[in-house]
Image (cartoon, rainbow, N blue to C red; front, top):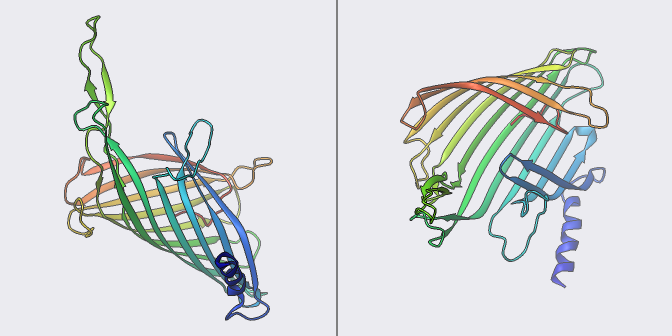
Length: 303
């Protein structure tokens, strides 16, 4: 009975406080997050309210992110033994000021809250039989603004300034180290990789700004970007009392025409990272380059 009542409220809620001509849609949201070492999947419903004549769009997206149980087979298993997960609640409001004639402008504000739990394994003595487990909870807050401006003309330049503020309190596993094994019967000495330290956490506050630029024709866009990261001391909540780093990037994106796979985005950028306060394990000035390949993305999607 309670489930039926909850379902009824969810169906009726979108129509409360909105005009009769407002559109409401529920869409599935699935986002695959992969890397060389691990794969994760994020899924949940997307609730979308639209008031087309006023250019208003309001989106709520609750989702859960979990690691793939079998990375080789891309299997996700959820049961009572699932110990690593992250719940995400994203709320977005978009105001489109575009008229029938004249320029095009759009403003979008997105707020996101994350909360999750993870179990970490480590071996303080470097022996597999001495396995230790510890469960910790992480959380994060994020606020983003995306603007879009262009003239209502063919081949007009397009600009998208984007701001992001993010605070995170994420537990991280320590790196693996090589541990020398006892000599075997053949007199051979081997090593095994173990995580010997417990997980740690440092609060981070990361403001960032990027300006997306499309010249109006061609298959390239450009995105100068700046980050300024504040990292606090271990197991504290204050991100401003330890380490500061400035990071500069200059992205060039290429959009190839790929048959049966639209919105492919290939990017390359040099980067420069400068430590402005505190100490860490890196040089004061670090530099290098990055390459990214994204599918199903758009010009506006950066942060």
